[in-house]
Amino acid sequence: MSQMFVSQLSSLLIDAIPAKIKLEDTLSFVSTGNSYRSLSHLFRLPKSSISQIISEVCQEIKRALKDHIKVPSTPHEWEQIEKGFRNKWNFPLCYGALDGKHINITGSKEYGSVNFNYKKDNSIVLMALVDHDYCFTYINVGANGSASDGGILKNCSIYSLIEGTWRTEVRALNSITHQGSNHSSSSAREKRTQYTIFFVNEGKVPWQNNMIH
Image (cartoon, rainbow, N blue to C red; front, side):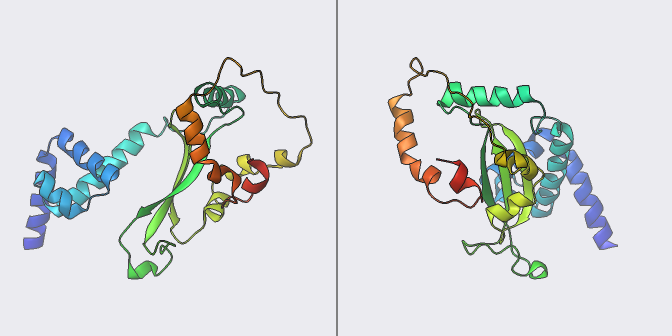
């Protein structure tokens, strides 16, 4: 009886919390990774309520915004992304930036070591593709932390697009127009020099060594 009363009381408390506070709580969690205990002190709410709020708000965000994140489906949409990389970053013929990100989680005996990664933490992996404005065009989240980026990519729905047979087709390279009036800034050149190692070294993705120069 007491457990039922506490459960009902908790539900009433959550219903009474303003939507603004619920959203602030959730955004704080996903942007900083703060623990429920820390958020409980910050927002002066029970830890059990924090847990339920974050779960419910994330589900609502997913439901409301599910149509706003999608893989480009037409040549024109891909061309607009390429145009953005070319004009904004002076990176012609680039259609997206792809990488994996480990999201730390609390380990569980139930899952053993499947989420134990090379950093000696437990995590799940977010594999994401972004356009020239840092906007997501594709996301895949939930892969085990012990998996490699290449292995995760093979299980992504976008894999057939990136790793398709078009890579073996012999064709002329797309021409790059004269860039004389589009010189990169000194800060852009410094950044490119700083990150050169990421483009010329061997990567986790199978085709990187052959396709990125």
